[in-house]
Length: 321
Image (cartoon, rainbow, N blue to C red; front, side, top):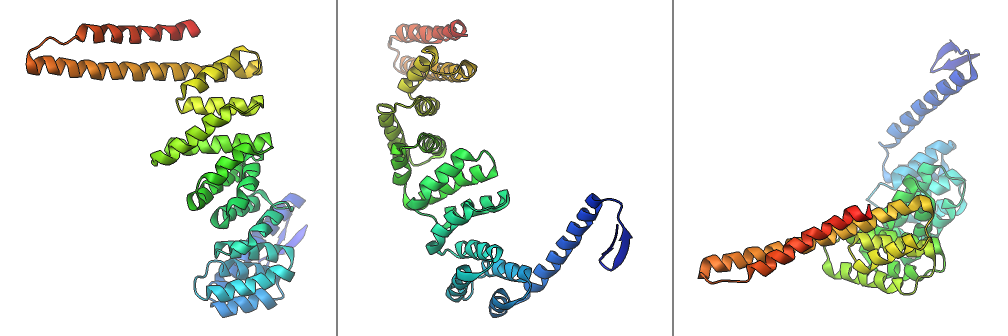
């Protein structure tokens, strides 16, 4: 197959090689377009976005307009007109550009284009934009995406939920614990618990844990209850670890997954024994300091006995194993 590439005639042996060279040639053309458009001002880019015959010129012009800070209101006004009538690729680029500019009115349009035939990269960008401009209306949508997409899009959806919650507060995510769909409730549990691990705000962390414990009293779905117990156990809530052990031994968890959850029960037990032992050691050290300072006898023997018993309980780990 003979083909002219960048002014050079070449003989291409296979269709695969032809496609590869064609793609490289196309990428080179795109780079040239974007470099030339970067030199344009806002007015010139708007003219190109509306009137250029080459669709790629319009797409790249719209993309660059989404990065401009000057004349923001005017750009948003023109991009909304493009969304109303343009070709799909230009329209989608205009929606993403509006999101970059902080236009909250196009939130529902982001929901719509996500359900169209987008590439994985475009879906990932769409959920990122929802994190930028979304409100409580986006929470359920993003939880659904996060629960059903075990890839970069799913990770970005979870991150977008955190970004929205940082702006509007935790309550919409707490409300998702009451959602009628099991997967939505499960994803809300995972995200809430992940948030707890890195929270410096003690008040918010306490509120989340209290809400999750309260949900434990009402949750009937075994998979959702399992997610709730496991995550609360990781946060070192004793009753959750106990419930997780009950679920393991009652045969409600598939055999191939029981070991995973039993390991968490063991970890939680060891953690609490360690914390208990450390508290006793601290008291013992305080008692010894009092003896040294005052020369009086303090009941350190009792504390040492309790310490030995606490550490001795660690042998139960081997019995469980």
